[in-house]
Length: 197
Ligand code: GDP
Image (cartoon, rainbow, N blue to C red):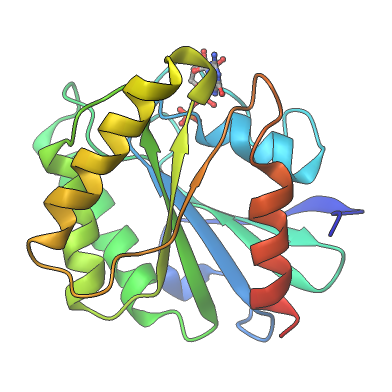
């Protein structure tokens, strides 16, 4: 599966302002700086589709991109950076969770995790809440080129181990490197199955 056309549709500050919900949707989220923009650029083949930004958390909006006139790719704002005021965090919480829990055409959420890190509380809590609310999700361990294979595998095993304390069936995961263009085929293959079952 190859994406032929990806174009920006709309930014929304609340779920009510998102585009019409008549197309299937797949959303991407992760901690700020996890490599989300780079991954979205790789998947769509559009450079700067989601701008790789050096200012973490600058875009606090729900961004819809129309893919091949068939589905929406949704770029959700990152979570978990320290320097944001409490009021901003509360806004993020409400906007994001309203979207995740209320959007009827949202088929899957891809949660991005930095493969270099041992399991992080913020990620585990976020995924836990998705699970509790029955939001379908997949995981992507990003920046695989930045670690030795064994080290990456250990972090993945530890993360899945932490999840297995509360999860019966563990979510499927992918490993990606935007630098080396790995993981693209696998992720797009799954997206094709989700969108065109
Ligand atoms: P975002 O904040 O989650 O959108 O993250 P970005 O895509 O902007 O990436 C954050 C930083 O990590 C940037 O400096 C990227 O160049 C770098 N980065 C992202 N993905 C990769 C990757 O797969 N490999 C390497 N080596 N660096 C990456």
